[in-house]
Length: 232
Ligand code: UDP
Image (cartoon, rainbow, N blue to C red; front, side):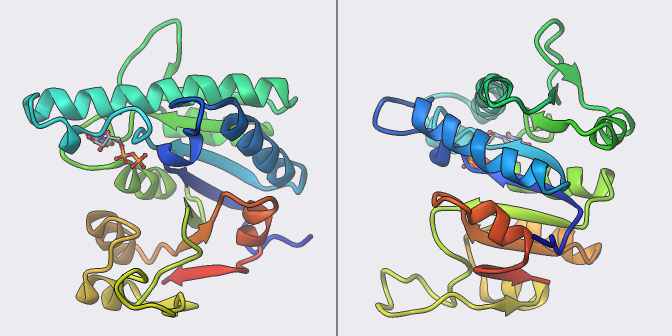
């Protein structure tokens, strides 16, 4: 297989990791460890930004003031990062876990230079705790980490197969768009990737590829630029 991109940041929503058995369903973790292993075997340098929505999102905790709620959400992504690191270890994939919220003894602090070095050494780098700042999401973290790591693309793993021109539930039969510019995406106010993230990516001409991640081989297809939507 010939990857279209050699260095990529994969954003994995928390909801992809959760399942019937709870927020850290073994099936989801094993599945994504296998998907990542295939990409790693194909020689792609991969950093992964886990989401945290399977455990907590700041905006869904209205009884908790937002600064604390978002911190809880960021820590949720660290929990996912820890679980993913173990799943990768079991799958024989070397990895390095970094956290934007210091957590000595558990994860290294986020350091783009160290992360680039680790990618060059053949490690998958897990970048947890989002940006380390409240009021944004891990979509924005994936974009700014991709810029800092000089990655060629953000791969946005989703449960839907791409960017729809309108809500497919509201417009039955709607098909995902093969390609849309950052500007057009923002003008239409589309939702699959956060507007703040697409805005920063657009300023830096960083492409985002939205693809369905919960089917076997989905990540490898995405790395070939197939079966998904390109924002760029
Ligand atoms: N979050 C944050 N800053 C960040 C990234 C995440 O405050 O840089 C918080 C925010 O509350 C967010 C939650 O962590 O809702 C979990 O992340 P996200 O919603 O992106 O997870 P996903 O929906 O992708 O699983």
